[in-house]
Image (cartoon, rainbow, N blue to C red; front, side):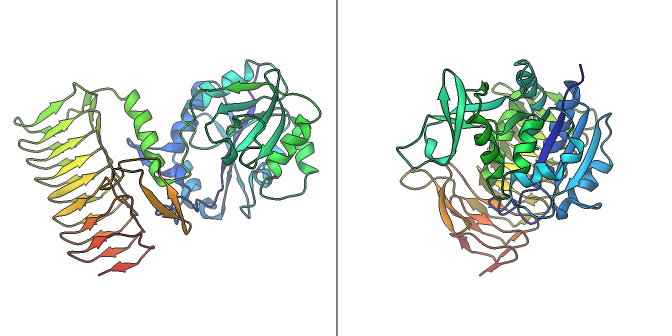
Length: 412
């Protein structure tokens, strides 16, 4: 039996993903040496899915961004790219792909790195439509199912607090059919037309759910990259490439987790690397430095006498002599000596930060700085917990970054 076409929605605005929201789609970010969306595609292929439709926006179209990335992707998948001209919701994105949808089809997000295993659970139901449900503690924040006898019979988008029909939210994996597609065509185009079409069908017939206890990792907000790092750490195997240069005085501690040291990576004199850790190709951990529970992408540099803790450093970024904790450092970032990232509030409360001009809880008690691509931080820079620094921003020496900086903004 042929498996259904998979529609991957990768055309969103990324508006809440600052400071990584002004480039290609967020799913093109690399962790542990591979873009996230390619992990999703490879997992689908491993589980027998062959026909893929990826809905993209103009920034990833015509040899740019995601479309360029896929040019070099070797697989047996049949991938069709579809342009969504305006980001006006999931419903419009699915309709943009309608010419490729002849029978049943799956709709997923591009960051579902275990998409194959999850999608198979939907097919096991052997039904025309199957939806995904997840119990949540704050149902008023989500699209919530009305439930009857274990099946969904209605869908309410962000119900008023206290009026929620259940605590089961709709999760972002869908097995749909031509009846749904026709209903979507007849639904007025708006931000939530995708969900409105589902609700119309639910009011006519109950639909089975596949339920999960834990939410799938999502990338709506930049600090959610840590969730993907955690998932990849759980799969990581210890490895030392033959070309890696590890000092005889270095300590590689794998007691608490695997350490992967890639091609050409270097670990200097008396440095200590405590797993789980990923050291990417041609990365460097300098002399007398301490790296733990962190990942360094290709050519990332932790200079001498430095500490990197529970952090992500993307390609070709570097810092020398300092302390970076619970932070995400984008591509091509340069950080001068003496950096210190504060990662906890003095009162130890949950850290908040501003996203789209609204203060938002990160649901984390430890969070350092999130630094956009190409930013530059001068010597003796300090950052307060949860600050977001835009791409190509500049922090002049001896500054304390206590609020978010816009793209290309200068502090000092």
